[in-house]
Each structure stands twice: as C-alpha cells, then as structure tokens.
Length: 274
Image (cartoon, rainbow, N blue to C red; front, side, top):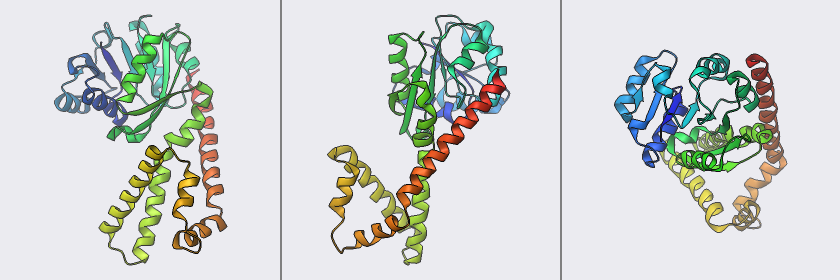
C-alpha cells in the first residue's frame, strides 16, 4: 500500500508518526510533498525514513491513498495541480477544515472516492478524537483502510458530513477548552500557595483519573459527580459556585459559538474554492 501526503505540517507528521508506530505502512511506501519548504521535507525524511519529492507524477504513481493536509486557502490551487495525476482507483482523504466533499470533487473534475476527516491536535500524542465521513464512491475496503489509518492516532467515529461543523466545535476545538480549565485551576492553586510544579502534577493526574473513571466504569458523568459530592462538603461548596455562575450554560454557549464559526468558515471556503 502506498500513501501520498500533500502537505507536511504538524497534522501530516502526526498521522505519519501514528502510521509508523502502528506499523500500518512501511516508510518506503509513505511519500510526502509540500509547496516549497524543502528543509521541512528533509527533516521528515531524516526522522521517519519516508520518501520525499516535488515530482507529482512520482508522488502519485500507484498511490492507494492521497491525504490532503494543506491549508484550506490553498485547496483550489492544490486540487487543480493534482487532478492530471489522479486515477479512479485512488482514495482521496482530506483533513482540510471547511472544504466540502462536493468542492473537492468539483475541483478534481471527476467522481473519486473521497473522505473528509476531522482530527484534533491530540493526534500528535496518538490520542485524537477523529470524525470521518465518506462519499458514495468509497468502498467498504477503503472505509476500513481509513479507520485503520486514523485509529493509529486515536479513536474514530463515522458521521454524516453535515455533522462535521458540530464535531469541529466539540472535539476539534475541545482540547483548548480543557487546557483553559487547567489554566484556571493552576491560577487558583497559585492563590492557595501550592507550588507550580506540584499543582500541575496534581491537576493532570486528577484529570487523568476522571477520564479513566468515565472510560472504565461506564457510568454517566452526573452519577460520578454525585459520588464525589458529599452534603455539606468541599466539593458541594465548589460546585455551588459553578452552578450559581452558570458555567454549564457558558460551556454550551462556547461550543455553539464554535459551531457557528465553523459553519461561517466553511461557507467562506466554499465560495473561495468555487
């Protein structure tokens, strides 16, 4: 199996690293290109022993999967450059945010098997929550291949394309929300006189423990919260402040705002790529 990467940024590297760690494909069958940053390609070749080239014919010759990992603003230009070298047997996988399958197919001027994939930045440590959607030309074998590749960088869910904006808001942007909580807890710890490194260790382990409780017990978050909350206790006192300040409502509004922005950016990208 040969996989060709169009783009060599951090997301492309995370996917490359995951594929190699899981031994889903050998380095000699992983090919990478970018627009002009030769030093970046050389760095990837030295680190991962992958193949690099600016020759599109060599890059795409007999490729089974073509992963589009370029900035959305460059999508139209890149797709038109690739079009002469693609064949119907190739599976086109896009991690370009906001660029619809319809736009990709229109610019490629053919009915290719196309998937859109929405990972998040946790892909760099193999913990991405990745949503995948397929068009009608993707075979069962290709669907399985996509899941194998992206499970190498975390977990996957299959969704309808019209859900991708909501998923972008929830899990695509989601890591930033948790980092924001950690920042707030670190500031509170500082006010309490807890040394910074100790506070960070305690916060990370607390979050890690909560995650494992959700994963391993199968219990709802509300039930686990109730189990920690004793009447008249410290947890109840803290939660009361969160409830009074409507933090749950604020979080919901945060995710809704992110979804709205995702739809706006997708609409702009669609107009630019027409």
